[in-house]
Length: 214
Image 1: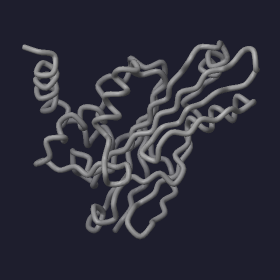
Image 2 (image 1 turned 180 degrees about the vertical axis):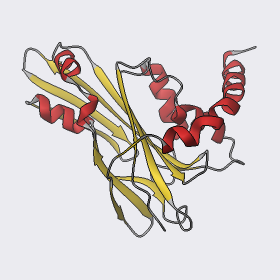
Image 3 (image 1 turned 60 degrees about the vertical axis):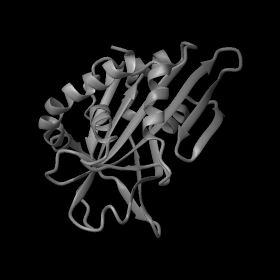
């Protein structure tokens, strides 16, 4: 069996078990206040989570090695196991020991941005902030009560794995991917966002927003 088919089988076998706990894992996560705004077509979320970098992680950030933060955002209807919309942000950061500053590359559906900052606190803030981040179309949220679940990990995946995640989440809808059980994309995305790999990362945090209505 080739690698692609093997991966598909693994995801399929894992999906049934993942779905059992997907909703409860998200709903039982710590609740944090997320600022929501709406455009004419999308729901935007803004939230910061600098506590991903504890004191030890901040010390490691200044060792000159490259680090990556991967933040996955999933919109859930209250009481439902599968996300109805998903999105991704990544931040690659390293400390330049010669220039004594931090170089960052941030990627999401809006493209790629490169920045250089002097302060450690600035680097951490840039890597751990969602700023007016589109998470779902308003039509997706037209009925029912929903919340946003966030998983952010420090150094969770290899470059190859991160590229595969980006490809899975690439969407023509403005950065978020709308999901449904009839969508062939559904199984692999649930596996990503329930994220059975938490524990492999250097650090990880998981939280959910307050419940929002239509």
